[in-house]
Image (cartoon, rainbow, N blue to C red; front, top):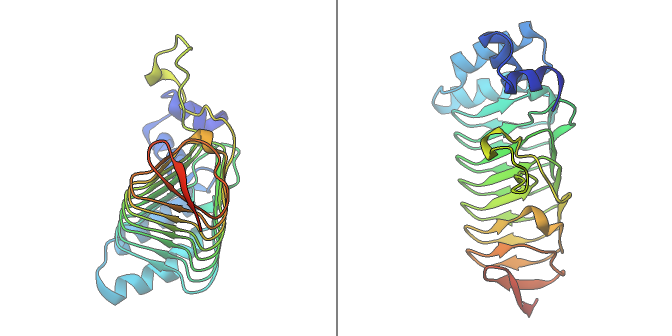
Length: 242
């Protein structure tokens, strides 16, 4: 991280400057204020009226947006100019899509992507791509300080955690609280048509998950997996070809 966002992290600048840098990034201040007003008026509006206003107004602040966007109550969009949605994207109540970073490309969703209630998809100067029909259940975390790509048709169970980056250097004498937490072993790529049960964890060291894999509830994935496999355990072990 560098420039304005780095200054925010180091505590420099005014309180207002910090707030707008963290939440809106490069977006012009007047446009950020308009979004603040939209969120204040319609962000938690109940019923069909709230859904209508959010779907029509929020798209104006995104980098790009397809048709039939659905935005639930209490949804948070950070650095919205670096967020790109295809057609039919659904963001359930209290979900977060955060493309924060100084020089990253941000977050891209394909068509018919679903983000469940209370789930967080966020960057720390990384990139995330969720391709068509990816379904993220409730209370999940998808994080990238490098690059995370999930190919079409994968299903992710509740309370799952995916990491591309986000590590701390235990050999560095700098206290962990003062480190950036952006160390990474490389990009994470998830093949098409995978099913992750509830509370599955995919760590930064994984690198690649083959297509058409199934991961049982509670599985911890620490290394690359072959396609067409059923995996269980911590660490994940192949128990059956499918």
